Length: 297
Ligand SMILES: [Fe+2]
Ligand SMILES: [Fe+2]
Image (cartoon, rainbow, N blue to C red):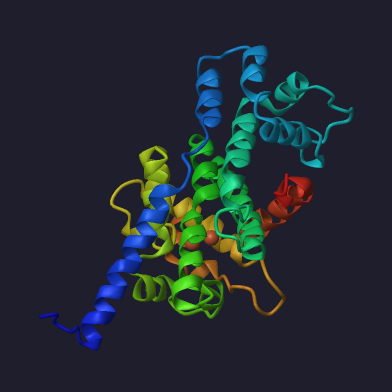
């Protein structure tokens, strides 16, 4: 005899299946491109420009991005950069790794994965902005770990690329609308889908074999105090995210940020004046990389 499930049991089963589907989708994301680790390895062993070029030139998208960024106003070049070798030298090690990481990450934000192009374009711009802001904070407060902060910033919302798709298909909900509503959207995500974008992002980054500091910062970027290790990195990404959110969107619909009443900002010593300075510097940086932000290469 087949036993019928009651409404509550059916709901619980659906919920469980949905979570399973989400985790499988995260599992199936293509691995983070090899070229990122190769370039990082070459730079660590202080390889020559020629060797680095040899790795990059076989990936046309990345080669194009390296060239385009080296020509952007952000780097204030007075003369035209004409070759990949020259671009590699112009960028320098730190920026080169950042560009390669961003070029690799861009793929996951490009709509081929979820098909929701508009949201993902905005999410991509947001991610690059948070990466640059996190880099600034790391420079200001910790001196080292700049690349770690940039990477964690770049990928902090990667969980959204999978979560948003599932919310739309299964629940017909637009999570970006919930997030705008100012409610505790992390809790809303968890209630609706059984997992939130921080936790899912941490799972994805772990699978891609990013270092612990990066995965912890992604997994705790909304509540850095909850991180069991590497709270500093989580706090940097949190502060960067909040400052960027306060700059995004229409006037009147932006997130309000009051650093004086925020414990993370207070602990980091970021007051309203500093927020303003960081935001102005970021706006300037973003202006210099407009093409890079379009992410349609
Ligand atoms: Fe987030
Ligand atoms: Fe974010």
